[in-house]
Amino acid sequence: MKKYYFLLLLSFGLIGCSSLELEAVPSSEQEAQRILSLGLSHEENLIEAKKLRSDHLVTVVTLQLTNARDEKIQLELDQVEANQYASEVMIINDGYKFKSLQISETLNNSVLDTETDSIKYYIEGIKDTNTGNVEHKLHLSLFYNSKKSRDYVSAIFCDQWNNCDENTLEVNPLSVIASKCTQNSCQFNEIMDINLSDKLLQTTLEKGFSMRLKSKNKTNQIKLSKAYLMGYLDIAR
Image: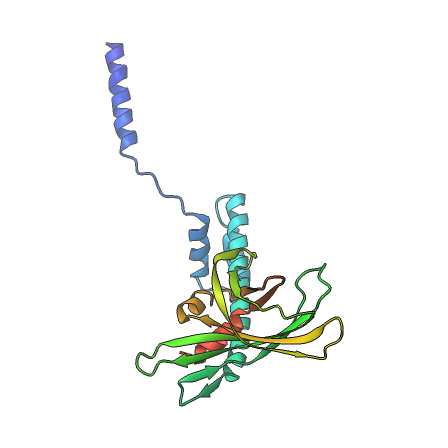
């Protein structure tokens, strides 16, 4: 009898446990988004984070709130810079051709590299009169000292961690000018362009992009900033 009574109580206990609903525990991302949605200042957000149920969750959410604040500040700075670049974009042929501001940079490719190159570049876009689609070209003018021209042939894209894509883009050579030649070297100005699709620029807009220019004996790396692309694409659309 006692055994039967014990089994009966155990059965009721199991039924009661099975009827309980487990409450979902919000993740740190959900907690951070909940606090951000309150529309508070960053300092007030951190106060809200301190009310969370564990020290670990407080630490993680605080970090996420700080990152969100920093990203917002950077976005505002990028937008100001992008507006300046946009104001420098030339609109030609009644809005069917666009030319970005030309940028000049010195390239130091590695600590051990004794050669110093310089480069000028800009993006040019041409809108199809029938479809309205815009195709872009990155125009490059590279200056360097060498015994002979390098004759760049390809380029690859790299991300912010310097991981580079396996797919290569073809470099279109336009001209090579040699000047100030001595017995050992000449100063070369190698002019080229690279076709860039509108889709490619749109997909790299979030971070900007780095590109490695490759010749047989030399590799140069250039970076187009997010703000530069934002400003150009804001007009070339």
